[in-house]
Amino acid sequence: MFRFRDSAKGIPSTCQRKTGGPVPITEAQLKAIFKQCDTNRDGRLSKQELKNFFASLGSHLPGWRAGRVLRHADGNDDGYVSEDELDGLVKYALRCGYTRIVK
Image 1 (cartoon, rainbow, N blue to C red):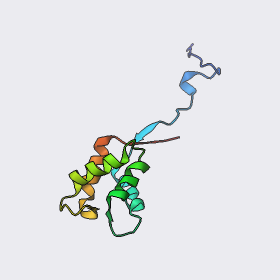
Image 2 (image 1 turned 60 degrees about the horizontal axis):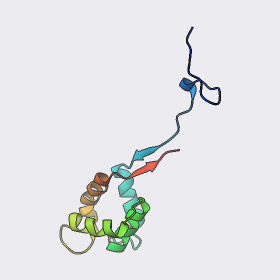
Image 3 (image 1 turned 180 degrees about the vertical axis):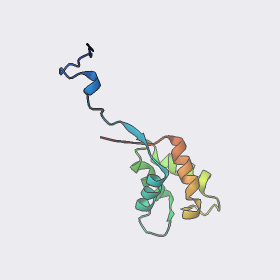
Image 4 (image 1 turned 180 degrees about the horizontal axis):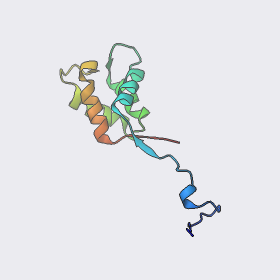
C-alpha cells in the first residue's frame, strides 16, 4: 500500500494543483510591449516611451533603465530606439530578467 503525505486540507500532496509563478518574458512578448509603448506610432521609442516600457515590465527605476538602454541599443545616437535597434533593447531587457506571473 502506498502512503502519501497529506496536506493541511487533507489532499494528498501528489494531487494538489500547481499554482502559477514567475515566468520569463519572451522576445515576442517584449516586442509586443514595444509596439504598445510606441504611443505616437512612429516606429521608435523615445526616452519617455522607454520609461513607460520599463514601467510596464515592473521596473523599480524605469527612468534609469530608459537611459541605460539608450546608451546600449541606440546605435545611431539619435535619442530613439527604432525597430532596427529593437534587438538590442530586447537583449537588454532579457538580461535584466523580467518575468510575468502566471495564475
